Length: 234
Image (cartoon, rainbow, N blue to C red; front, side, top):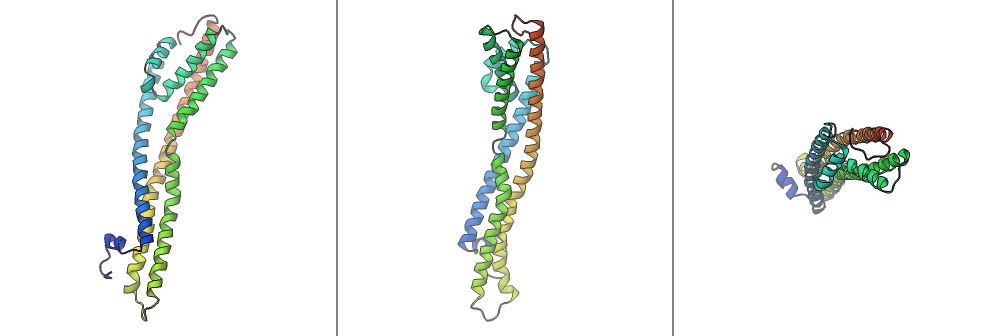
């Protein structure tokens, strides 16, 4: 390659096949990473919107039975918080249908159902985070491998030369360093996105755990006030 022709495209085209393979791999990982970032961005925005909408309905004074009926009808489009609520109410009503009237048993059953639903919802919300973490931690090392291999390849090519100057060394070294640059290009957005999403998901988890406690308190009050009837309001 002409020592003056140092454009990125030419550096990539003239790199060894191993370095080119590393670059293609890193570019593919980068594209997959950006796709995961945008999916997670829209997914979290939707989760927050649906949770806020349900919470407004929950605290608007609508009866628990009406909210449960609405949640059952809207199961496919419901948000995580609404599904958690529906799980608790479903278990509560099943226990009441079995003629169980002990408040502690009813409350524990509803809480266990909500905690199980909460864990399932968080597993869904946290999807793709491990992929972003892997991209952020591994990509720089993959790029570094490409760089080391490229430098080794470049120096073996100089072995038969009687005189080695900066002009002859620079292109080969530059080709190798492109792999590290692409590795960082893949890793940096993934790390930033991972940290942002991890913080947002923690907030969603705290919000939903708070709701479980608040709903449990409402059920406890209803059980204390109306031990022989189904929960009808809050």
